Image (cartoon, rainbow, N blue to C red):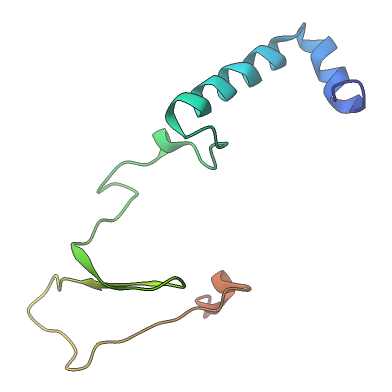
Length: 99
């Protein structure tokens, strides 16, 4: 609750309640456009081809655990055997950090 969170209460008093109105606006936006789930990222920050890549592909296998996507090659030279990369679920982002 607001009264159980001193930092939120201070912010509410300092902003004259503007933070509560901003939160209500976010909640209504999430309810209308996101299936009542909170937004994870600011979607307006991404622009296709500028800071977001797009590759043609198709789902070739679907199981309860995974979906296997086969991407179309973008060049004429491709590997004879495809590479399958399965990152671990824990610390998966560190798996690709080779530096």
